[in-house]
Image 1 (tube, one colour):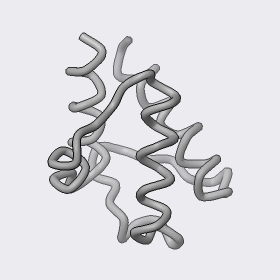
Image 2 (cartoon, helix red, strand yellow):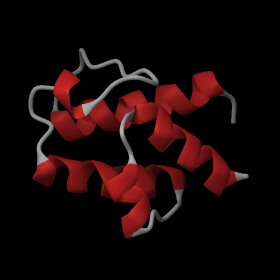
Image 3 (cartoon, helix red, strand yellow):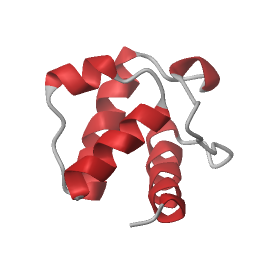
Length: 80
């Protein structure tokens, strides 16, 4: 999966979880950039990403992500 395909899928998940078709995430997107991104929605987001990509994050990973780029890097490493 290339970077463009990865971010296309991530955008689909973010738009669905936050019910906002205008969301477009990048490597530097953080919770501060998305209005409804709180701790509960973060859990929903993680679960949706795990389902979409057929992967599982461990709690340490989930707590360490500083932006979408770090999350994307973890997804790529799990899919490799």
